[in-house]
Figure 1 (cartoon, helix red, strand yellow):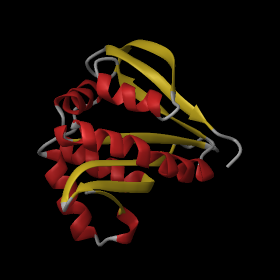
Figure 2 (figure 1 turned 135 degrees about the horizontal axis):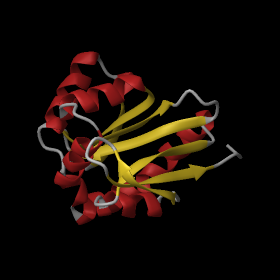
Figure 3 (figure 1 turned 60 degrees about the vertical axis):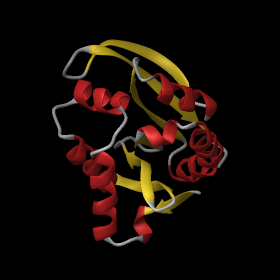
Figure 4 (figure 1 turned 90 degrees about the horizontal axis):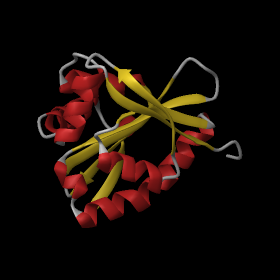
Amino acid sequence: MITFVDLRQVGPEQSVAWVSDLAGRLRPSDLDEIAATHDLDPEVSLTTSVMLSDHAWVILKGTRPIAVFGCAATGCEGSGLVWMMGTPEMDERRAAMTIARATRPYLRQMHRTYPCLWNYIDARNDKSMNWLRWSGFRLLEAHPKHGREGRLFFTFARYDPHV
């Protein structure tokens, strides 16, 4: 069974345990994206993302975390930096379909704070791009030399001013 847990509703020990578990099992595409962007360890990268986010959820399959996602302020009013990282288990057909369907209400919740949700995505991260398209995001601009590795990334965004 797939469930979503608001990380603001659990204790810090549980959040740290889930993030640590996830960091050790991330999808190769997510590890590649982290490495291409900066030189932070995956656990530090996930922990930082969770700590900076005013919306953050872990996705559990049973009791085991398979993904974490959220949204952080960008410093520009009405604009939030949306992100998601996960394990290969989130790509299993049944889990992927459940997650794709279930994330839309969470996006609406983030849109209540930020009419514009956006970020950058590694062009090699096909599975995440599929989720972005399914969720109504658009690829906007190519950045051929993004991040510390100078790889092709795209800006993606979703705008909903009516929430």
